[in-house]
Amino acid sequence: MIENLQEIINIIKQVRNTSGTNDKINILKRNKENELLRKVLSYTYDTDLKFGVQKRSIKEYSGESKWSSLFEMLDELANSNINDNLKKNIGRFIANLETDDEKELVTMILLKDLKCGINVKNINKAMNLIVTHDIQLGSKWDGTLNEDVAVSLKLDGIRCTWLIQNGKAIAKTRQNKVIQGMNELTEAMQEVFGDKDLMVDGELLALNQEGLDSKDLFKKTSAIVNSKGVKKDLTFVAFDIVPLEDYINKSNDDYFLDRRRKLVMYVESRNNELVQLAPLYFITNDINDINEKLNEVVAEGLEGLMLNKLNSPYEFKRTKSLLKVKAMSTMDLRVVAFEEGNGANEGTLGAVVVKYKDNEVKVGSGWTQDMRDEVWNNQDKYLGKILEVQYFEVTTNEEGKESLRFPVAKGWRFDKDEESYE
Image 1 (spheres, one colour):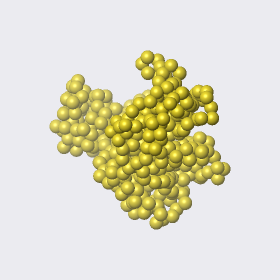
Image 2 (cartoon, rainbow, N blue to C red):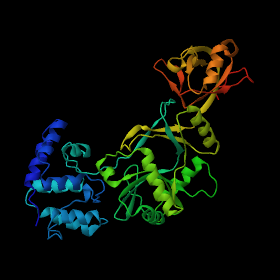
Image 3 (cartoon, rainbow, N blue to C red):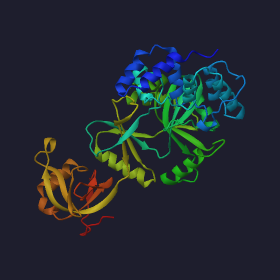
Image 4 (tube, rainbow, N blue to C red):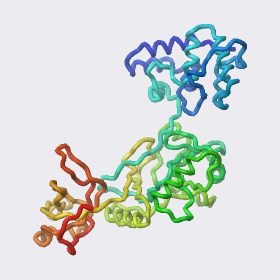
Protein backbone atom coordinates (compact mmCIF):
# COMPACT_ATOMS: atom_id res chain seq x y z
CA MET A 1 0.00 0.00 0.00
CA ILE A 2 1.46 3.39 -1.03
CA GLU A 3 1.97 5.69 1.96
CA ASN A 4 -0.22 8.74 2.48
CA LEU A 5 2.24 11.48 1.58
CA GLN A 6 0.00 14.54 1.75
CA GLU A 7 1.03 15.58 5.26
CA ILE A 8 4.70 15.34 4.26
CA ILE A 9 4.02 17.36 1.12
CA ASN A 10 2.43 20.11 3.23
CA ILE A 11 5.43 20.24 5.61
CA ILE A 12 7.94 20.35 2.73
CA LYS A 13 5.97 23.16 1.05
CA GLN A 14 5.94 25.08 4.32
CA VAL A 15 9.72 24.73 4.62
CA ARG A 16 10.19 25.69 0.96
CA ASN A 17 8.08 28.85 1.35
CA THR A 18 9.96 29.98 4.47
CA SER A 19 13.01 32.13 3.80
CA GLY A 20 15.12 32.05 6.98
CA THR A 21 17.29 29.02 7.74
CA ASN A 22 16.46 29.12 11.45
CA ASP A 23 12.75 29.29 10.61
CA LYS A 24 13.10 26.25 8.36
CA ILE A 25 14.87 24.38 11.18
CA ASN A 26 12.09 25.32 13.60
CA ILE A 27 9.48 23.84 11.25
CA LEU A 28 11.40 20.58 11.23
CA LYS A 29 11.75 20.69 15.02
CA ARG A 30 7.99 21.02 15.43
CA ASN A 31 7.55 17.89 13.31
CA LYS A 32 10.51 15.87 14.59
CA GLU A 33 8.26 13.13 15.99
CA ASN A 34 6.64 12.51 12.59
CA GLU A 35 8.09 9.12 11.65
CA LEU A 36 7.12 9.36 7.98
CA LEU A 37 8.83 12.75 7.68
CA ARG A 38 11.93 11.34 9.37
CA LYS A 39 12.04 8.49 6.86
CA VAL A 40 11.57 10.83 3.90
CA LEU A 41 14.39 13.10 5.11
CA SER A 42 16.67 10.18 5.89
CA TYR A 43 16.20 8.43 2.55
CA THR A 44 16.67 11.72 0.72
CA TYR A 45 19.71 13.15 2.47
CA ASP A 46 21.62 10.14 3.78
CA THR A 47 24.57 9.89 1.38
CA ASP A 48 25.03 6.19 2.16
CA LEU A 49 21.73 5.51 0.39
CA LYS A 50 22.25 5.77 -3.36
CA PHE A 51 19.45 5.08 -5.86
CA GLY A 52 21.40 5.49 -9.11
CA VAL A 53 18.58 7.49 -10.71
CA GLN A 54 19.09 10.50 -12.96
CA LYS A 55 16.44 13.06 -13.88
CA ARG A 56 16.47 12.19 -17.58
CA SER A 57 15.78 8.51 -16.84
CA ILE A 58 12.58 9.18 -14.87
CA LYS A 59 9.69 8.65 -17.29
CA GLU A 60 6.16 7.49 -16.61
CA TYR A 61 5.16 4.04 -17.89
CA SER A 62 1.74 2.45 -17.96
CA GLY A 63 1.12 -0.76 -16.06
CA GLU A 64 1.44 -2.03 -12.53
CA SER A 65 4.67 -1.42 -10.63
CA LYS A 66 6.38 -4.26 -8.78
CA TRP A 67 6.36 -2.15 -5.60
CA SER A 68 3.35 -1.33 -3.44
CA SER A 69 5.30 0.90 -1.03
CA LEU A 70 7.60 3.90 -1.53
CA PHE A 71 10.20 2.58 0.88
CA GLU A 72 10.03 -0.92 -0.59
CA MET A 73 11.09 0.68 -3.87
CA LEU A 74 13.80 2.82 -2.26
CA ASP A 75 15.25 -0.12 -0.33
CA GLU A 76 15.58 -2.22 -3.48
CA LEU A 77 17.15 0.63 -5.42
CA ALA A 78 19.65 1.27 -2.61
CA ASN A 79 20.78 -2.35 -2.80
CA SER A 80 20.78 -2.77 -6.60
CA ASN A 81 22.52 -1.54 -9.70
CA ILE A 82 20.10 0.50 -11.73
CA ASN A 83 18.93 -1.13 -15.00
CA ASP A 84 16.19 -0.69 -17.61
CA ASN A 85 13.77 -2.97 -15.79
CA LEU A 86 14.10 -0.98 -12.55
CA LYS A 87 13.73 2.29 -14.46
CA LYS A 88 10.45 1.09 -15.99
CA ASN A 89 9.14 0.00 -12.60
CA ILE A 90 10.04 3.40 -11.17
CA GLY A 91 8.08 4.99 -14.02
CA ARG A 92 5.08 2.77 -13.33
CA PHE A 93 5.22 3.53 -9.60
CA ILE A 94 5.21 7.28 -10.24
CA ALA A 95 2.46 7.01 -12.91
CA ASN A 96 0.20 5.25 -10.41
CA LEU A 97 0.44 8.06 -7.83
CA GLU A 98 -2.74 10.09 -7.54
CA THR A 99 -1.53 13.70 -7.54
CA ASP A 100 1.18 15.77 -9.18
CA ASP A 101 2.42 16.77 -5.72
CA GLU A 102 3.01 13.11 -4.85
CA LYS A 103 4.81 12.55 -8.14
CA GLU A 104 7.00 15.59 -7.51
CA LEU A 105 7.86 14.47 -3.96
CA VAL A 106 8.81 10.92 -5.00
CA THR A 107 10.91 12.28 -7.87
CA MET A 108 12.75 14.65 -5.51
CA ILE A 109 13.45 11.80 -3.08
CA LEU A 110 14.88 9.68 -5.90
CA LEU A 111 17.08 12.62 -6.98
CA LYS A 112 18.17 13.21 -3.34
CA ASP A 113 17.02 16.83 -3.07
CA LEU A 114 13.70 18.12 -1.73
CA LYS A 115 14.49 21.60 -3.13
CA CYS A 116 13.39 23.42 0.00
CA GLY A 117 16.68 24.99 1.09
CA ILE A 118 17.75 22.51 3.77
CA ASN A 119 20.75 20.26 4.14
CA VAL A 120 22.00 17.54 6.47
CA LYS A 121 23.36 20.08 8.97
CA ASN A 122 19.95 21.77 9.20
CA ILE A 123 18.15 18.44 9.58
CA ASN A 124 20.47 17.29 12.36
CA LYS A 125 20.02 20.57 14.22
CA ALA A 126 16.30 19.89 14.20
CA MET A 127 16.20 16.16 14.90
CA ASN A 128 19.72 14.62 14.92
CA LEU A 129 18.65 12.15 12.26
CA ILE A 130 21.44 11.41 9.78
CA VAL A 131 24.89 10.02 10.62
CA THR A 132 27.51 12.17 8.95
CA HIS A 133 31.08 11.17 8.17
CA ASP A 134 33.00 13.67 10.29
CA ILE A 135 36.55 12.79 11.33
CA GLN A 136 39.31 14.55 13.21
CA LEU A 137 41.54 16.76 11.07
CA GLY A 138 44.83 18.29 12.15
CA SER A 139 45.89 21.94 12.07
CA LYS A 140 49.27 23.29 11.09
CA TRP A 141 51.72 23.66 13.94
CA ASP A 142 52.60 27.29 14.65
CA GLY A 143 56.05 26.44 15.99
CA THR A 144 55.13 27.00 19.65
CA LEU A 145 54.60 24.47 22.41
CA ASN A 146 53.26 24.97 25.93
CA GLU A 147 52.28 21.45 26.97
CA ASP A 148 53.24 17.81 26.53
CA VAL A 149 52.43 16.25 23.18
CA ALA A 150 52.77 12.74 21.79
CA VAL A 151 55.00 12.82 18.72
CA SER A 152 54.18 10.31 15.99
CA LEU A 153 54.95 9.81 12.32
CA LYS A 154 52.91 11.75 9.76
CA LEU A 155 51.78 9.22 7.20
CA ASP A 156 51.60 10.14 3.53
CA GLY A 157 48.93 7.71 2.41
CA ILE A 158 45.19 7.68 1.72
CA ARG A 159 43.09 8.63 4.75
CA CYS A 160 40.82 5.72 5.60
CA THR A 161 38.27 5.29 8.37
CA TRP A 162 36.87 1.85 9.15
CA LEU A 163 33.38 1.53 10.60
CA ILE A 164 33.10 -1.82 12.36
CA GLN A 165 29.74 -3.15 13.52
CA ASN A 166 28.50 -6.67 14.25
CA GLY A 167 31.76 -8.12 12.95
CA LYS A 168 31.51 -6.34 9.59
CA ALA A 169 34.06 -3.72 8.49
CA ILE A 170 33.39 -0.94 5.96
CA ALA A 171 36.16 1.40 4.77
CA LYS A 172 35.47 5.03 3.91
CA THR A 173 37.58 7.80 2.45
CA ARG A 174 37.75 11.26 3.96
CA GLN A 175 35.10 12.24 1.37
CA ASN A 176 32.73 9.55 2.70
CA LYS A 177 33.14 7.19 -0.26
CA VAL A 178 33.10 3.47 0.48
CA ILE A 179 36.31 1.80 -0.70
CA GLN A 180 35.40 -1.44 -2.42
CA GLY A 181 37.60 -4.40 -3.32
CA MET A 182 39.98 -4.50 -0.33
CA ASN A 183 39.07 -8.09 0.42
CA GLU A 184 42.23 -9.16 2.24
CA LEU A 185 42.42 -5.99 4.28
CA THR A 186 38.73 -6.12 5.16
CA GLU A 187 39.18 -9.66 6.50
CA ALA A 188 42.21 -8.49 8.47
CA MET A 189 40.30 -5.60 10.01
CA GLN A 190 37.42 -7.87 10.96
CA GLU A 191 39.88 -10.27 12.58
CA VAL A 192 41.64 -7.55 14.58
CA PHE A 193 38.66 -5.36 15.59
CA GLY A 194 35.56 -7.37 14.71
CA ASP A 195 34.39 -8.24 18.21
CA LYS A 196 33.46 -4.62 19.05
CA ASP A 197 31.55 -1.75 17.41
CA LEU A 198 34.29 0.75 16.60
CA MET A 199 35.53 3.51 14.36
CA VAL A 200 39.21 3.00 13.57
CA ASP A 201 41.03 5.91 11.95
CA GLY A 202 44.25 5.75 9.95
CA GLU A 203 45.76 5.63 6.49
CA LEU A 204 46.15 3.14 3.70
CA LEU A 205 49.70 2.54 2.49
CA ALA A 206 50.95 0.28 -0.26
CA LEU A 207 53.44 -2.41 0.66
CA ASN A 208 56.87 -0.86 0.18
CA GLN A 209 59.24 -3.65 -0.81
CA GLU A 210 61.02 -1.22 -3.16
CA GLY A 211 62.00 1.21 -0.40
CA LEU A 212 60.15 4.12 -2.01
CA ASP A 213 60.29 7.57 -0.46
CA SER A 214 57.14 9.23 0.86
CA LYS A 215 56.21 10.92 -2.42
CA ASP A 216 56.56 7.81 -4.61
CA LEU A 217 54.86 5.57 -2.05
CA PHE A 218 51.87 7.91 -2.09
CA LYS A 219 51.66 7.58 -5.88
CA LYS A 220 51.74 3.80 -5.63
CA THR A 221 49.10 3.79 -2.88
CA SER A 222 46.80 6.10 -4.86
CA ALA A 223 47.10 3.92 -7.96
CA ILE A 224 46.02 0.83 -6.02
CA VAL A 225 43.17 2.50 -4.12
CA ASN A 226 41.79 4.12 -7.29
CA SER A 227 42.00 0.93 -9.34
CA LYS A 228 38.92 -1.13 -10.17
CA GLY A 229 38.30 -4.65 -8.94
CA VAL A 230 40.22 -6.39 -6.17
CA LYS A 231 42.82 -4.21 -4.45
CA LYS A 232 45.91 -6.03 -3.17
CA ASP A 233 49.22 -5.08 -1.55
CA LEU A 234 47.70 -2.56 0.85
CA THR A 235 48.25 -2.16 4.58
CA PHE A 236 46.24 -0.11 7.05
CA VAL A 237 48.21 1.98 9.54
CA ALA A 238 45.96 2.89 12.48
CA PHE A 239 46.45 6.02 14.56
CA ASP A 240 43.19 6.47 16.48
CA ILE A 241 40.10 4.62 17.68
CA VAL A 242 36.73 5.53 19.23
CA PRO A 243 33.53 3.62 19.98
CA LEU A 244 31.15 3.56 17.02
CA GLU A 245 28.49 5.19 19.21
CA ASP A 246 30.80 8.19 19.70
CA TYR A 247 31.30 8.46 15.94
CA ILE A 248 27.53 8.42 15.40
CA ASN A 249 26.83 10.98 18.14
CA LYS A 250 29.93 13.08 17.35
CA SER A 251 30.99 13.15 20.98
CA ASN A 252 34.02 11.57 22.67
CA ASP A 253 35.52 11.99 26.15
CA ASP A 254 38.51 9.63 26.02
CA TYR A 255 41.94 11.28 26.19
CA PHE A 256 44.44 10.53 23.44
CA LEU A 257 46.71 8.27 25.51
CA ASP A 258 43.74 6.18 26.64
CA ARG A 259 42.63 5.77 23.02
CA ARG A 260 46.17 4.89 22.00
CA ARG A 261 46.39 2.16 24.67
CA LYS A 262 43.17 0.60 23.40
CA LEU A 263 44.45 0.72 19.84
CA VAL A 264 47.74 -0.93 20.81
CA MET A 265 45.86 -3.64 22.69
CA TYR A 266 43.79 -4.56 19.65
CA VAL A 267 46.58 -4.48 17.08
CA GLU A 268 49.27 -6.20 19.12
CA SER A 269 46.97 -8.92 20.44
CA ARG A 270 46.08 -10.07 16.89
CA ASN A 271 49.45 -9.49 15.21
CA ASN A 272 48.12 -9.26 11.66
CA GLU A 273 50.80 -7.94 9.29
CA LEU A 274 48.23 -6.04 7.22
CA VAL A 275 47.13 -3.92 10.21
CA GLN A 276 49.86 -1.80 11.77
CA LEU A 277 50.25 1.01 14.30
CA ALA A 278 51.41 4.49 13.39
CA PRO A 279 54.83 4.88 15.06
CA LEU A 280 54.63 6.93 18.25
CA TYR A 281 58.13 8.16 19.09
CA PHE A 282 57.97 9.96 22.41
CA ILE A 283 56.19 12.51 24.59
CA THR A 284 57.77 15.96 24.95
CA ASN A 285 57.21 19.66 25.50
CA ASP A 286 60.56 20.63 23.96
CA ILE A 287 60.54 22.17 20.48
CA ASN A 288 64.12 21.05 19.94
CA ASP A 289 63.07 17.41 20.36
CA ILE A 290 60.47 17.90 17.65
CA ASN A 291 62.85 19.63 15.25
CA GLU A 292 65.48 16.94 15.76
CA LYS A 293 62.98 14.15 15.08
CA LEU A 294 61.58 16.03 12.09
CA ASN A 295 65.03 16.24 10.52
CA GLU A 296 65.49 12.53 11.14
CA VAL A 297 62.28 11.39 9.48
CA VAL A 298 62.74 13.78 6.55
CA ALA A 299 66.22 12.36 5.98
CA GLU A 300 64.55 8.95 5.71
CA GLY A 301 62.28 10.22 2.91
CA LEU A 302 59.21 10.55 5.17
CA GLU A 303 56.77 13.47 5.25
CA GLY A 304 56.78 14.81 8.79
CA LEU A 305 55.30 14.45 12.26
CA MET A 306 51.96 14.65 14.08
CA LEU A 307 51.56 16.11 17.56
CA ASN A 308 48.68 14.87 19.72
CA LYS A 309 47.88 16.87 22.84
CA LEU A 310 47.64 14.28 25.59
CA ASN A 311 44.49 15.41 27.39
CA SER A 312 42.36 15.88 24.31
CA PRO A 313 39.33 13.86 23.18
CA TYR A 314 38.79 12.82 19.58
CA GLU A 315 37.10 15.78 17.89
CA PHE A 316 34.99 15.25 14.78
CA LYS A 317 36.31 18.38 13.05
CA ARG A 318 39.54 20.26 12.38
CA THR A 319 41.22 20.86 15.72
CA LYS A 320 44.30 22.38 17.31
CA SER A 321 44.57 19.35 19.58
CA LEU A 322 46.14 17.52 16.63
CA LEU A 323 48.98 19.34 14.89
CA LYS A 324 50.79 18.67 11.62
CA VAL A 325 54.54 19.24 11.45
CA LYS A 326 55.73 19.00 7.88
CA ALA A 327 59.27 19.16 6.58
CA MET A 328 60.82 22.61 6.68
CA SER A 329 63.09 24.32 4.23
CA THR A 330 66.09 26.41 5.29
CA MET A 331 67.67 29.75 4.39
CA ASP A 332 70.93 31.36 5.45
CA LEU A 333 70.11 34.93 6.57
CA ARG A 334 72.07 37.82 8.07
CA VAL A 335 71.43 38.91 11.66
CA VAL A 336 70.57 42.62 11.98
CA ALA A 337 69.25 42.95 15.56
CA PHE A 338 68.32 41.23 18.80
CA GLU A 339 65.20 41.45 20.97
CA GLU A 340 64.90 40.80 24.68
CA GLY A 341 62.44 38.15 25.74
CA ASN A 342 59.67 38.33 28.29
CA GLY A 343 58.37 36.02 30.97
CA ALA A 344 60.87 33.19 31.45
CA ASN A 345 63.17 34.85 28.90
CA GLU A 346 63.21 38.29 30.48
CA GLY A 347 66.79 39.53 30.68
CA THR A 348 67.99 37.26 27.91
CA LEU A 349 67.42 36.65 24.20
CA GLY A 350 63.82 36.57 23.02
CA ALA A 351 64.42 36.62 19.27
CA VAL A 352 67.13 37.22 16.71
CA VAL A 353 66.08 39.55 13.87
CA VAL A 354 67.30 38.54 10.42
CA LYS A 355 67.08 40.31 7.06
CA TYR A 356 65.03 38.52 4.39
CA LYS A 357 64.94 40.41 1.07
CA ASP A 358 63.35 43.79 1.94
CA ASN A 359 61.83 42.61 5.21
CA GLU A 360 62.96 41.74 8.73
CA VAL A 361 61.97 38.45 10.33
CA LYS A 362 62.04 37.59 14.02
CA VAL A 363 63.39 34.13 14.88
CA GLY A 364 62.34 33.31 18.43
CA SER A 365 62.10 29.50 18.34
CA GLY A 366 64.78 26.83 18.28
CA TRP A 367 67.07 28.33 20.92
CA THR A 368 68.34 26.47 23.99
CA GLN A 369 68.49 28.46 27.21
CA ASP A 370 72.29 28.38 27.15
CA MET A 371 72.35 29.76 23.60
CA ARG A 372 69.86 32.51 24.49
CA ASP A 373 72.20 33.66 27.26
CA GLU A 374 75.30 33.32 25.07
CA VAL A 375 73.88 35.45 22.23
CA TRP A 376 72.33 38.07 24.52
CA ASN A 377 75.55 38.55 26.46
CA ASN A 378 77.75 38.60 23.33
CA GLN A 379 75.69 40.47 20.77
CA ASP A 380 78.73 42.03 19.05
CA LYS A 381 79.98 38.51 18.29
CA TYR A 382 76.76 37.53 16.50
CA LEU A 383 75.59 40.78 14.90
CA GLY A 384 76.01 40.62 11.13
CA LYS A 385 76.66 36.87 11.18
CA ILE A 386 74.77 34.28 9.12
CA LEU A 387 72.04 32.24 10.83
CA GLU A 388 70.54 29.15 9.22
CA VAL A 389 66.76 29.52 9.58
CA GLN A 390 64.30 26.70 9.15
CA TYR A 391 60.75 27.59 7.99
CA PHE A 392 57.54 26.12 6.63
CA GLU A 393 56.80 28.45 3.74
CA VAL A 394 57.29 31.91 2.29
CA THR A 395 54.35 34.28 2.89
CA THR A 396 53.42 37.72 1.54
CA ASN A 397 51.85 40.46 3.67
CA GLU A 398 49.36 43.15 2.63
CA GLU A 399 52.20 45.45 1.61
CA GLY A 400 53.61 42.83 -0.75
CA LYS A 401 56.61 42.07 1.44
CA GLU A 402 57.72 38.47 1.70
CA SER A 403 58.30 36.82 5.07
CA LEU A 404 58.83 33.36 6.52
CA ARG A 405 56.17 31.30 8.25
CA PHE A 406 57.20 29.63 11.53
CA PRO A 407 60.93 30.49 11.42
CA VAL A 408 63.13 28.40 13.71
CA ALA A 409 66.83 28.86 14.45
CA LYS A 410 68.71 25.92 12.96
CA GLY A 411 72.31 26.93 13.68
CA TRP A 412 75.06 29.47 13.10
CA ARG A 413 76.97 29.42 9.80
CA PHE A 414 80.31 30.85 10.82
CA ASP A 415 81.82 29.11 7.77
CA LYS A 416 80.15 31.52 5.35
CA ASP A 417 79.48 35.23 4.96
CA GLU A 418 76.82 35.29 2.26
CA GLU A 419 73.08 35.09 2.46
CA SER A 420 71.28 32.29 0.64
CA TYR A 421 67.57 31.85 -0.06
CA GLU A 422 67.93 28.33 -1.49
